[in-house]
Image 1 (cartoon, rainbow, N blue to C red):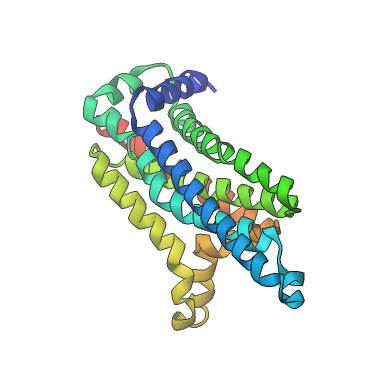
Image 2: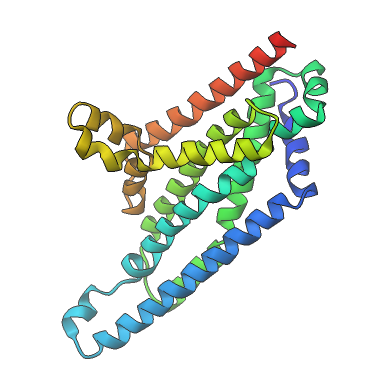
Length: 256
């Protein structure tokens, strides 16, 4: 696809020229480190109590006490941090006027959208991989479920990619980064909590709300399961908002 690599490289350079990427990654790792320490401390406390209670000792494992709660907490953290990464993708280009220059290059709109999204997704992957040294340490002190750990990270990456696509779309609608970030967070939070009101809505709307909820499709990954329906949801969710971004650029080009 013409120009995709060029856009991808430009976007990656843009992330690390500004302090935003460094601040977001540092914040993510700091919060991850805090939750890792908290969960390990709780594990130590439970282990000490289990010394006097064999029944508790049989149910203690690193996966349930450390790994799964840690990944669930990281999902919530990403919900807050991803809008900070995606808010500048197109909004900054629009505010500086460089979007006009970008759209005059012999580069397809699809290449622009995919190049920016892939750069954002790679940054997300870097953030997640940076936490792996701590997770690997767990294998030195116990026997966590590696499969559960991998599926949990896969779920976080798919969720992050879906929210990133949503953020890229919102960023294409405005030139104000603050508005872009706020709208992305609001929309992401809405998709996160939709299933909470499913019981009040009743059928069939309750079923619809559950199917549209990110959290509903993320839980199976935390449990070590990979369902085709959940994978399909994240792929379709991401593809839909990337397509909407493409249409947004077409509309901007037409108006220009």
